[in-house]
Image (tube, rainbow, N blue to C red; front, side):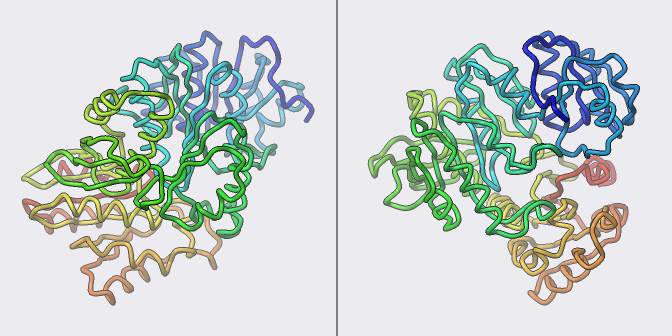
Length: 471
């Protein structure tokens, strides 16, 4: 393969694995920029299929050499695509130019703009979303591509004419021909590092491997740039030891330039104080709740201040931020029973989400429903940690991982063992082999005042809507 480059003149672009969240957004951006876009994927289904079709993008279901018969000027290869994919083989045979998603973003979207990048094991989508909305409120007309649907825009991407491009810095690998992390492709003016924990067990060996990757990212940030780094995690402190850029810490330590002050709940608002260099900076309110979300907000405030956005604009942006779909998103209420959806899957994310949601309940029970389905959560690497993260919940429902056959038998996570361990901790926990069994249980168990928190990084067999229908 000799043409891993983007030619100077491009008119036609084909995306292999077009229906992923990032690739789908990129396809739409390219179409909006005026390129002729086609794509293919193994499974083409709503909502992404409808979204792409509305943009006039031609899609092929399944991968086949004939999908490249029109010989596009450029092929963008998704990171889940393997070397033996029939379209990759045909691309190679035809000698077509190809690139990865980050390469395409740099060329077609970020070129000529200042990149604002959010990295970390947790909180990337929320932090980047708040930042993108704040720039809009400030009149900066930003571009962005984010891994969640922003309710303020009803989209996960935007092409603006302003100077800034907001993007999540993903530590996952780039493509089969580039096993380095995606975030190394960007050279941000300002960046955030929210956390460093072990995740993505399918590509990282252990925590030291993850820390090495993040250290490489930090050391690559230009001298003239600024990194906002969370102060409450030792892994972050170790990783930023490799920096040459300007670093500002944020969190709750008195020694950090950006510090979270007093927090009060005035439903539906969370009201909080912010200190800069130990001097009062402002008092703000947001509909987001939970300490982890306030820390994400604090990082954005640090970025906004570095971009000279006034405090009154910051306050207006936080007040009007609508949130992100699948992040503590209320899907509906029936019989005074609330159904909430959240993307949480890593033990830390589950712990913080359960704790934050429980803190909002004056009365009523919190019923936590969890589906482990990521490449990491279906492995036993967190088998001993998961029992400790559900403590605030009143009832816990654990589903059998739906894709366990993808994991070698000796490495598989056991939902049955998790439930046994939860019961040992004195929790009201239950194991379910499938989604139907959970629905049957909740139909007779949930009572008015309860909040059912559903956590999964997948569709979970449309459990949210089905649950609302049977309640």
